[in-house]
Image (cartoon, rainbow, N blue to C red):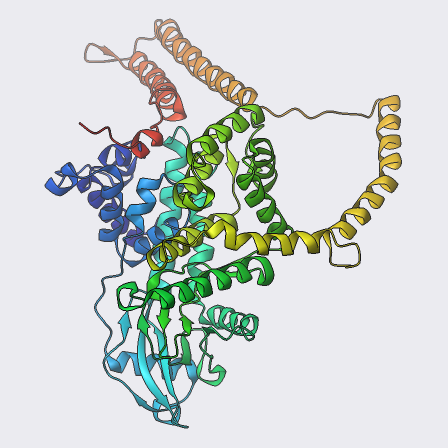
Amino acid sequence: MILQDLNRVRQITVIAARHGFGELAERAGLWRILGRKEKVEVSPEAQRASTARRFRMLLNDLGPTFVKLGQVLSTRADLLPAEYIDELAMLQDHVEPISLEDVRAQIEGSLGASVESLFATIDPAPLAAASIAQVHRAMTLEGEEVVVKVQRPGIAERIDSDLGVLRSLARLLEAVVEETGVYTPTGIVDEFDRAIHEELDFINEATNIRAFLENHRERPYLKIPRVYSGLSSRTVLTMEFIRGVKLNPAELSEPERKAIAQNILDASFRQLFEDGLFHGDPHPGNLLLMEDHRLALLDFGVVGRLSRPMQETLVMLCLAVALKDSESMARILYRVGVPDARANLVGFRNDIEALLGQHLATTLGQVDTRSLLRDLLDLAVKYRIRIPKEYALLSRASVSTEGMLRSLYPEMNIIEVALPYAKELLAGRYDPMQLQGGLMRTLLRFQAMAQDLPTQLSQILLDMESGKFTVTVRADQFDKLNENLRSAAVIAFMGLCACGFIVGAFISFAPKPWMYGNVPVLGVVGIAVAAAFFGAAITWYIFGGRGLGKVRLSRFLKKPKRK
């Protein structure tokens, strides 16, 4: 690490200790890397707070990159328990707005022209200021009202610097964490790296907006802002200004609330089952109600994409939930995910059956989707099944959408409204007259498999006959045993060398007792060399993972017992 990174690590370590995570920093060897241990008192607020709240406070104090990391993690209910997701969802960017001069400089540097030649006016007061970008109202030379999203100067470099530190800390954690679940710390940092750089690239967001605009062109109840390509770049995004107010059910009549709820639900299912492109963060702040009662959708930095097979799997999963078919649910989730090891399908099915009995004891319209989805994701983590990020993002979006629907029109039976969409997709899947239908694709795959199977079986039999057939067995226990044996051999070798030096020193140098005062010089040299070997053996024993036990993250993630 360079000096600047070491200073950042020291700052992170001190703040982590202040929030009650000193033991984790100690186990990760951060104080050893920094050269000395500072005495840090845990803050009174952290002493009273839960672990999840302390984690949120820690990320908030570490700055914009870590706040963004928390916001990304809040969309991944498959990574953290529900208590952590709830806390991280409250993370907000609290930053000072940048000056209008910096905004103008960023626009001119990014678009390659003076502000006066691009815009008629720019409002000096920002509409919103976040850690990555700032938004201003403006007017084009043609007199059209727009909003200009401008990236903060230097934010990309700062995030890249923090990402380097994060990646180093993740490697240290992997060395001292006993269990990392189905996701490793470095894997989480790599995924965050991809997500944050997608958000930093406004061209990516502009592409998402255009795709949504095309998909919703024939849906008159929804408004998507238009992108001004000539006034946009990687760090500047200019969009159509939309007049509207935030959704407030208290100010709407019952027929209005019902109509808006139906429009939100229709748009959501169309995105999932027709478009395959859905909004990843549909909270009330990203929805505006226009004067003509149309809904305007904003902020397209986080979107999810579902392939046709993923859409079909989603429908089958919804039907399995509706029919309380735990066997089908277990197999679908197992097939959807990427098992980190061989999963116990029987235990998985039994746990799902108990879960369905708990959540579906009432009518389908009264199901708490939020709790059901979270418990299913917790089960997947328990059985070490990695859920693709698209499904995890869909879980977050579904929970947000359901919350809005229940606040607008609590009497709505979501399952009843969803069934026509599921039937429509299933009809298309098994329609033999459509080349896009799933039945046709299934027949083609079966034909290809039938053609390849004889050749593959013949190859296996020939390999067995000629003695070339090999089976590769992989087991974590064998790897650990091999590592332990290697460590034991090295320690034993060093110990024997040390003993040999001690005995050899006194035997070999006895005839020629080189003395310095009353001390035999060669004997002391032999003992010193032996001590060096002993020290190396002890160091290997301690820091090779045998002396200090690894810390269990599950202890930090456990929900504290209420007194």
